Image 1 (cartoon, one colour):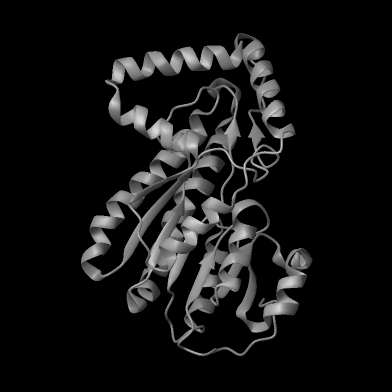
Image 2 (tube, rainbow, N blue to C red):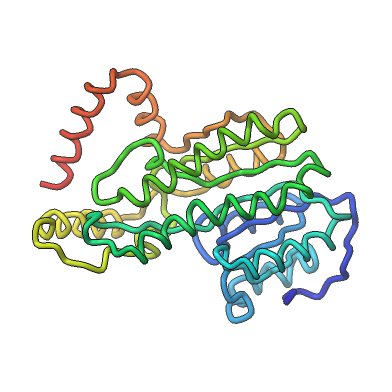
Length: 291
């Protein structure tokens, strides 16, 4: 169901972006940024019809330039529906797809159930791959771009986060492969890999639903660390939003875009140090964090 009053076809010259996971965090901020930049925005989230008030101000200000749609990225039915609706917008073209929907499953691997692990990979990796596949005909028509929102944790293996880290690492590698696959067709692919920013990351995280005694002390300290990080002001997420908007507009960018000092420093360490040395440095860092 389309939640703004609009015709099936809107002016063909206006650029259109589809953004997933728009109810909070980077997704919500990206909607506003793209609208301000003159784009037509298809903002998606689960159960959009019950949360339309999240964008009441934007709908009033931007009218038909904002189209809010329901999309559970793990639902094949929802993906089919959004594909049909994109076909009716902008002369069957799409200028940019931003795969932003995702969350973190935290805790020791043994504490995470099979259901939790499968859901983590379905949301963070399988769903964006399938949605990208569905959108490629529209992206090819406009020679558009795919921007995947990954994480610093795609190239730094944090303890108590193995499922999340590996799901984001997979998304970054999909981005790299697709770059080579789609570049000859005129499409651009980018992975944005932010460090820690004020986005409600901890609030949207899930924890393993088991309590293995072997990990209880470290899990408790990880909770304390997360709570400590969540109580501060946090870093303004606008640099991430600005980087995504720049990439969507064809501005300078690399395949992997590290945003934030922590992400930049981690990438330098990753490239500069021999692997054994890097792992020892990270082990010392994690020991300090958890003690």
